[in-house]
Amino acid sequence: MIDDKETIEEFLAHQSADVEEAIRKAAAAEILPRFRRLAEHEVDQKSGPHDLVTDADRLAERRLTEELRRLLPGSAVVGEEAVHANPATYEAVRGDAPVWIIDPVDGTRQFVHGNDGFCTLVALAHRGTVLASWTYAPVRDQLATAVRGQGAFLDGERLFAGPPAPGRDLVVAVSHPDYTTEEQKRALRALWTDGVAPRSCGSAGLEYLAIARGETDAVAFSWEAAWDHAAGLLLVEEAGGAHLTLTGEPFRITGGNALPFTAARDARTARQVGELLRTGS
Image (cartoon, rainbow, N blue to C red):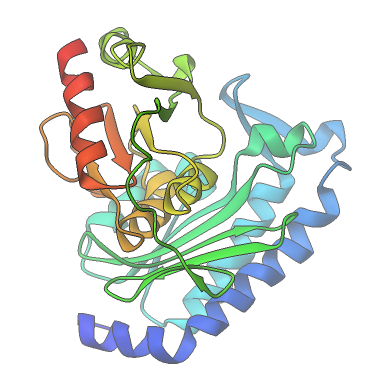
């Protein structure tokens, strides 16, 4: 049983490549063979028509759960589909054991519609701190990784988000209205203002990658499921970015955040977007 951060860092130093291999193999076995080949019986709704799950989600998560637990004995797993089946399993995010946080197909709606804008997200956290993350876009064969304090990388090349270019509108990806309360809608509407170019978000994981690459300036999200955010937030941080909730505090994967929250390519942009959200709330 791993019981301290130093030991987890040793694990990451020696076995990050094994984690990467497990993610690639799960995608190759369970996700890619179903891309643009899904049968009707392989797709279900969860909370509504925009909240889909497929056999690829379930089987990839099951495979990753088994392999990641094998790689790190004593670790827990919080996976999107397992939590949907048993919400109590989410409590492992707040526990003392190292926890793998998995979204097997982030962007399931895109996956179902044959769009390659989806990814597999895996993060390793301990006592509320995300220590490492993997963002894998299997159709594009892109893998972004981050280890706390060691930088963010895409296919082995260092990522630096950098500040937005002066004099142009900020590009901000915004939560789909179906996932927002009326109060959150008011806060998000404040982004429709001079100097900001809001747009609907796609896969959360790929939006975070776009920030880390300096292609998108910020996101404004209204939900806090750890599997959507843990991997990407660390990637953004390690690329030089920042994240803030409505109260001006960093986002916590353990929950209880004031929403909506923002993540941005630099601290100044995060403060700017956060101030707009507060004016609308």
